Length: 268
Image (cartoon, rainbow, N blue to C red; front, top):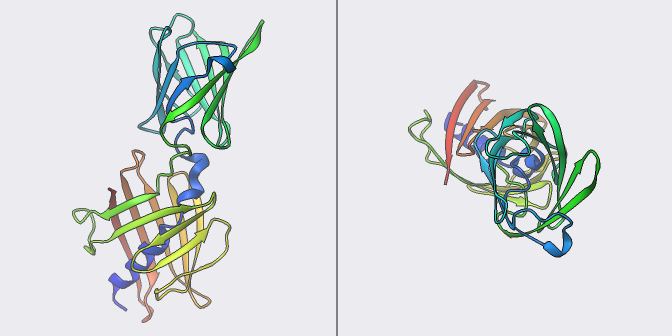
């Protein structure tokens, strides 16, 4: 089997890892929101916009009678904030797939801790503000736009960047989520796989099965087998901005020859 055939098999198998990264993907609050005053004990601005920024951060804008505009990373470190009298630092921490904790500080001292929680259907954002010496205050926001689930950096359509890949195969890849923990891929061959450590069958491929593993939010590994023999190992890494996907693939041809290749894809 030619080397190009080996890499092509790996490329189409490995992209079955999308939905396994939702907890480590983009902020679940990304989208546009309108205040539900009837459900809120605290009435700040009447519109909230949260968009993803580079390096796994978010840009938050509140508008209306009160205005707030800042960018912060969800890495647990303080980010500076200007133009707000009550606090000048903010820290984001992802609690789980549906919750984010925001800590507001004034010159290093904690002013308030805010817990943001997304409803199961993704359409409602409840914010609970906790501060020493006063009752907890609740604000409820209703989604008016944006994704209802956390962004998955691997999902979508990808085209091979011929200028960055030695093996110029002109591949186009597509990944669609299946439920909460699976993915369907359709290409030269197809498969449906889940992130449970099991082996899943491939259709119209020289390999028989694939086993998937999430390394982190932007990195996935796959092991493919023909019969009981491991024939190939791939590692995919998606860039921080979500625009580039890099495949490093190693495997053994039917002749016993060991080969390695690297391919680059761009999101369409």
